[in-house]
Length: 53
Image (cartoon, rainbow, N blue to C red):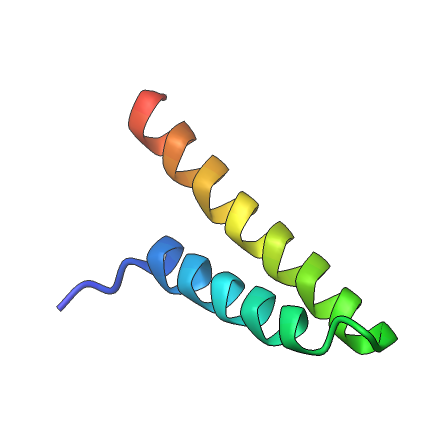
């Protein structure tokens, strides 16, 4: 069974963003939002590069 790692990274990025949004009053929450956004963006860019070549 093949695992779509880009999809796993995308979902983990979204989860990090949601957790960070809940903790946005603290510095750690802002950091989680940023990391989640970058992970989701990296997964989407990777998929676009693979798809459109």
